[in-house]
Image (cartoon, rainbow, N blue to C red; front, top):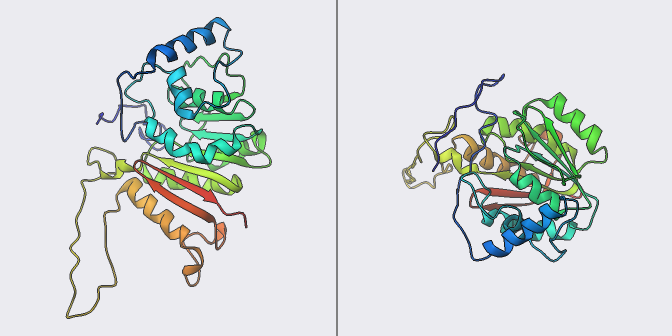
Length: 282
């Protein structure tokens, strides 16, 4: 696992742009020569047309654009998880918000995959990323906890709502919660909300993480225990809070965030390293 990078201080300290992968992968693959050839074709065309056909998957696109994977490259497993959610939207004029761009690898993948859509990528730190040839990408500086800035971006670039929102920013539970509360209402009914790298909550080297805590489960005087206490540091605690939101009508009285409505989630799927939520159509 990579160490937490040292970052500049900004309002909430050096945490918000700490983009890191919970499951870093690397190395070559058997398709690397074909991917390299496709990249050469793309460069020779000036980046204005894509050699990636409509039948290509997210993983195919990622391999074509980034044949040499870096320490912080998005795991291919994540793209595999997203494929069934994204493929029905591929030919549509969607609005996609990526919170946390870092070096722009996944931003370019989403740009190529959703060629008819618009991709808005935001980050606390603007880097010198070459987005030439990715004309549907808008790259902006914004703090993931700044509700006013996020609201303005939504009004300016997705006045009818976003189709997909992906949080790949700080991987700090409290910051991700604030992002969720600010932008989930800006997601279209039936839209997709993704939270990446929630496993940082198990890392004692992470700002709000901690080593896994085991809580014993024992009956007390023959009674069934009503509470099954579990690890809730950082992003892990945030994901478990999302389960409370998913409970919907099973909660008697007000839920954790009444302004989201009684049934905000149609579904919530938890995968290793990432969570995919579909917003209710109601």
